[in-house]
Length: 420
Image (tube, rainbow, N blue to C red; front, side):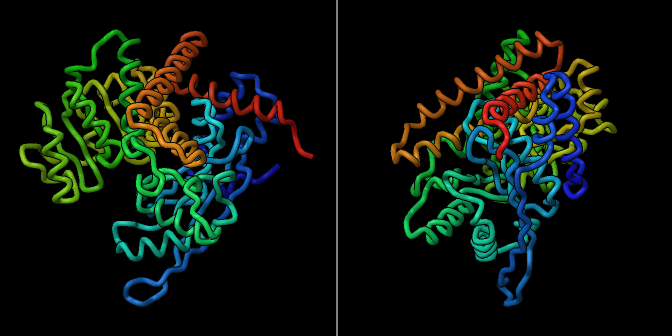
């Protein structure tokens, strides 16, 4: 038995509890269940860089491969001051189920560096990214592990990663990462993919729940790449965005926010805080405001046992990874709140990352209309499978989504067997 304490974190405990509950429902082979509880490999690296002031500072970085039964690993890279081995391991596990659920030929991975990217200059971020890439280079590659942007990273981060890896190969290797700028092999629609996927699953949920999205009041926690795109698209479709927040705080207007003006304010000031015509709120208070749809798209463990009873939304769509603790999940379920889980709701990013990877391997690129059409089809198909299974088994959408993802990965292990 491997000691799992070295991976211990709140999110990892949550991920293991979810797996164990689903394994019991699936009557999973105990040997396969045991394999799925642990990552295939985990690398911890030191990342020394020379800061602008001339001194050397060492950061801690991680890259975890959870599973390779269905193909090479895929997963984001995050820069955040709370990154740790347990969190990265849990996120890699969730990515495995997500890829299985979306029927992608990938296993799950995740990476991270413990830092505050807002405190680093552009030059320091480039040095950090290139040195981190050099330290994990034995694990990544277009046929091995394909990183993508996540919390605190972006297209530029991926460009630096791709360039660093390519320099070691003596040729350009666009398939080593996804989420790159278009000019070096990125895909049309990748930046908007996660937020767009949230909207597509909401379309399906509204259809099954028997109501229109237009006119619904929406609160979005997190106005980064995911939350801002979801807010903009829902606003354009006639939803009333009553509140949003980011690292600087939240803003609230029950009559609705003009998202176009809010985006201009963020571009100028760097935060939603101080947006004219709106009341200031904390991130925590924003979650508890009256609304029809709540989109937690910031960081994990935002909806907890101590605030779940005060959530007023009838639908929660998880744009972030792990924003709802298991205790809160149970309370929301008991109150009849529909929770569209992270492994389904925010899967648009990895779906379009798969499209980008395929395009890069073929050196043949698709039009954005093709990307969005295929994304909508895959998101709708996955949601409808999950909805049908939830009704058949009498479980919530999270359990049904995890059952679909875990079942597919377990079947891959069963067919492949155990080496040697």
